[in-house]
Image (tube, rainbow over all chains, first blue to last red; front, side, top):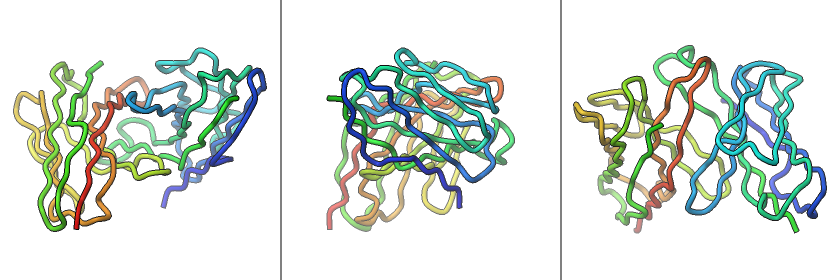
Length: 117
Length: 112
């Protein structure tokens, strides 16, 4: 079974703090993703990475950065947390498109609920 | 990129078949239609994916008409544990991955 783990389930930070969210997957997946989920807005892609040290901006990258030093680990960084970054953050991983057999599946972690005060 | 529209919520009873229809009018030629399920306090979980006609796996069926502008997820004989939010989305292939556009989802409540 694929396992995607996230470092914290719940996190409370103060405005202006630097925040690190960690994600680790154990399936040797090339692709990793960070989403945020807000009521009424579904999931929105922040950043994704298709290889070590490679990253691409998603739909809402402003205020975020990412780091992928090892294949299994993808970190989301909030350089200076703000209250509008209070959200549920979800990490996912997958094989490269077309190499996963009949389907292209993203496997999600349990999420980190971040509150910025 | 294709946007999806699906009902906000649906109610059903145990043992019934549930069909959730999703529209994706501007789906592109290379896009896939994908459904995910999400329980509270968990990440979404892949259910089924298809390109055209009908796909069936051990948990669901996916019906896609020829014009691919809509699709229907069919859950046979639902149980209480199928209460969840179901997302219809379109997966757009990119260079080495694909992009998922999640909508607001359909909240399914299964009653005893």
